[in-house]
Amino acid sequence: MAVLAYVLFKVSSGTEREVCQKLIEFGEVKQADIIFGEYDVIVKVATQDLDKLEEFVSLKVRNVPNVLVTSTMIISREYKGKSSV
Figure (cartoon, rainbow, N blue to C red):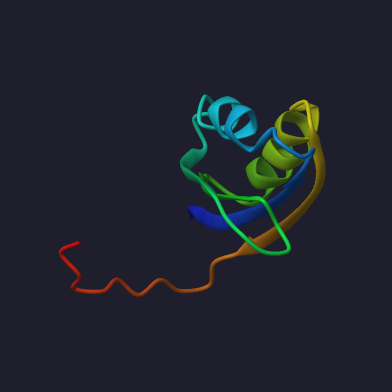
């Protein structure tokens, strides 16, 4: 069963764009966004299972330069809006 998750990132100041550009190179990443607030970047991830999610975070994400802290949140259910924007 596929696993969807959001991974929140704190990165070195001024490296948000660089980190996003590196993260979107990974096949697991569906979207990467720069955000304001406690975290700097949020990434939506899709993996085959929890083991693959753990491999993605442990082996790929933690090797990206300028990533200081991550927080992973597994999606339990998605709801899609009707917005056309």
